[in-house]
Length: 402
Ligand code: CTP
View 1 (cartoon, protein in one colour):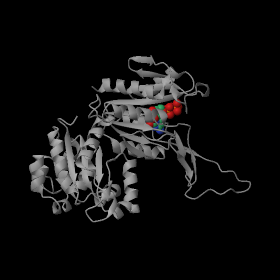
View 2 (view 1 turned 180 degrees about the vertical axis):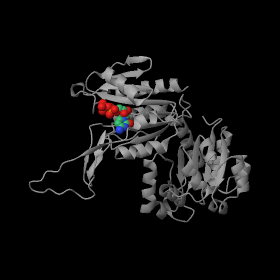
View 3 (view 1 turned 90 degrees about the horizontal axis):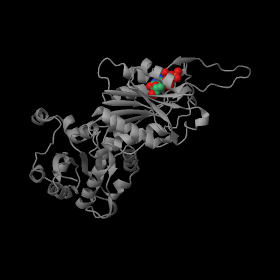
View 4 (view 1 turned 30 degrees about the horizontal axis):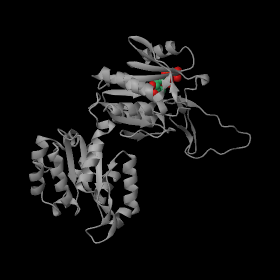
């Protein structure tokens, strides 16, 4: 499992750093290569000499080290690994990631990476219990950061409670589990970056009211999960959906179509884009900044203007267009004819078309019956669960990108 894998090990400044020396040995015993990074504070606890001797690799210590930057820039360094492990993950490092700070090599790498990150927290029990640390930990978990520990027990500072860093063998097991997990498996989409949009959008009328549609986000979520399980690095741009986002993807939550467009643009370039969101075609032309009051005898009249068509924009990019752009067509009649015309109009490679008439029970339901429309014509897939549709589509995407 670990043979041939590359682990970027970030050692934070805590007394538990001594356990990281043992962790490096164990990782190397199993054939992994370890690229060590130390914070300034870590150097107060273990020496770069010990770390580099055990890792068999020079320690990266400085953001502004021209020698290392010339050899391998910090962005590349952060992305070359199969897994980033932070051990010990101090309150400071966790706070920097959660707060979006990047003022040294470790925090910059953590911000620049698109590789999964496993954190092994270590700190005094009072620090671990502090609401700010707990808030950061919860947010990091929500973002898909993996955690191992902290354990409960006697601490070097003489107190007792949760905060002790996990033992090297426990961290090793967590690394193996994380590497075995879907997104890291040696799947056919390993190394491919795919943007997936999902869910409805909410178009504000005023600060408390909005216009939306009935999309649950179930199909888009299933697609993101399927792509990640084939090893893709998925950026999941989701409107306010009913279903939680899948594990192992980068989640970007948005409200309106314009937010979604900005998030998609920010996520590019990508190898593929799958636009499963039910984007509102129109938004309220003059969104009121204050709540519209009910006035006797005067009914509000809403005027609309057109939202940007994200799928069309991405499909027609002059430069940096994803190699494969997949759109969706939710239709209620003449499904194949409308979807075929939509594919031509928007300029995407494939359209996944479905009939969302109320009697089909598809919108908001668990099953889907789709037609895959490409330049080879239309393929009718049997009715099946939304995850099964997603798995089949992910296989097709993998074949197309290989
Ligand atoms: N889409 C998009 N941005 C929009 C509207 C739609 O990216 N503003 C994408 C959807 O995510 C989906 C596809 O376009 O992949 C189909 O959207 P749809 O609303 O069905 O297409 P329209 O061109 O609006 O056609 P219709 O007249 O049927 O609404």
